[in-house]
Image (cartoon, rainbow, N blue to C red):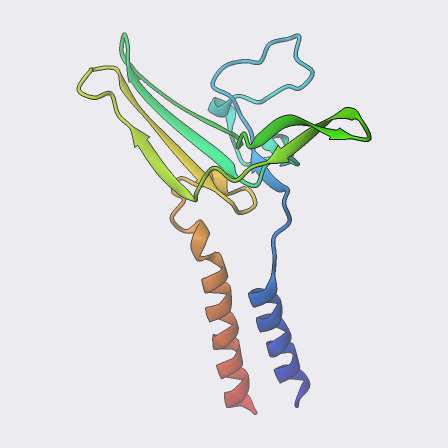
Amino acid sequence: MTPKRSLFFAVIWITLTHVPSNAIKCYKCSLTKTNIYLKETIGLCADFDYSDRFKVNCPNSTFCVKKSYKAKIAGLINGTERFCAYQTFETHKIVNREWIPTVIIEEPYSENCTTINDQGLKTGWTEECYCKTELCNGAKSHNGARQYPILLFLFAVVIFIKISLIL
């Protein structure tokens, strides 16, 4: 087997066997300024620019969230916030006759967007989008996030065909 073919099969193997870790990196920003007494400062989504100051590690989450709001209260108000999904369930276990605090990371979400409308009232709507890839909540649309492994696989096939034609 030639070195080029070995490289091709290595790329295919890594693509197909890649298992993401439990923690994920997401963008985080808020609609309003953070409370000055909180330990962490969150950037405003109005200033969101995909820079490092909006990137956070989410050790207790496997999903990122993007929430978009539109309200018709004294004019049109639009807003978007980005954050790590809330997935922790805090409980206790008995270990050696002692109650030990335990945190369980649950998987209550699926990768999709849901729109909550105002049911005919003239107040507005909310769209919540959940996704599982790195920094995916920065996208305008989440439909492309699930296609990344497929595109990587197709790219590897095209490279393999070109290498085969050269040899």
